[in-house]
Amino acid sequence: MTPILDVSGLTIRFGGLVALSNVSFSIQPGEIVGLIGPNGAGKTTLFSSLVGLNRLNAGEIRFEGQKVDGLRPYRISRLGMTKTFQNTALFPAMTLFENVVTAAAVRMPLREARAVARACLEKVGMEDAGDTDVDDLTFPQKALGEVARALATAPKILLLDEVMAALTPTEMDAVIATLRDLRSREGITLVIVEHHMRAIMQVSERILVLNFGQLIASGTPAEVSKNPDVITAYLGQSDASHS
Ligand SMILES: Nc1ncnc2c1ncn2[C@@H]1O[C@H](COP(=O)(O)OP(=O)(O)OP(=O)(O)O)[C@@H](O)[C@H]1O
Ligand SMILES: [Mg+2]
Image 1 (cartoon, rainbow, N blue to C red):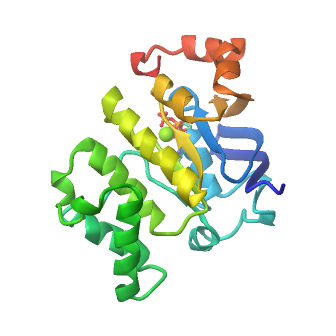
Image 2 (cartoon, rainbow, N blue to C red):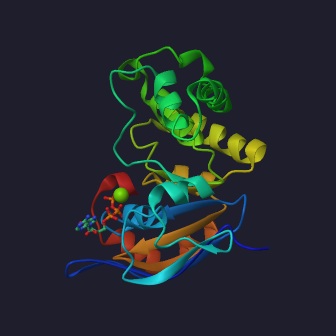
């Protein structure tokens, strides 16, 4: 099967800093893949690079077999690859429904966008929260709202950057159940960055591990959690939220 995403030799430098070094991996359609690594490992940089926000210093990115590196972000989005933004970012002072409509309206007339927005809210079980101002949403509602807004771009693959960061373990379980449902019902491929180990190990079928810009491991949750390089990478940093 043609991978939905195929990355080879991806290298990104910011001045003297090598944020990603010769990173290669591929993802099959319908997979749920976790992307982990200590702070500053390059996870967000990888997502940004995939959706066309960084100039590559080397390497190639193929989406459904088509080379997409060098394409503008809106063209990559239209092909079907969308990312959420870390530490965000529903538009404030709007209702949730308005947020999702805004994302859909980029590619269709407003009337249609409203119908798509309603459908996207339903897909994550948030149809009753549409009229709520985003500032009044609970953390789990915000997380699902962000997913709904991303769905409005009709992604085939969705890159989720720490959407569950503010949640309690129980809230995370509920969001994870919704994400799994979404993959089963819509067939959307998910790549999930999350620091909370139990959550990411639970939701992912496969895990990619970045450390200092290098891909140091790839395998099932059981495999990577036994991997000595991965254990060393995590022991080498002290933030308790990562364990
Ligand atoms: N636009 C930029 N310009 C310069 N350096 C950057 C830029 N974006 C990221 N970096 C650096 O690249 C490295 C990787 O950062 P990145 O944000 O991708 O890490 P991360 O794995 O997402 O970390 P976190 O878990 O804290 O979100 C870091 O050293 C960061 O300071
Ligand atoms: Mg990040």
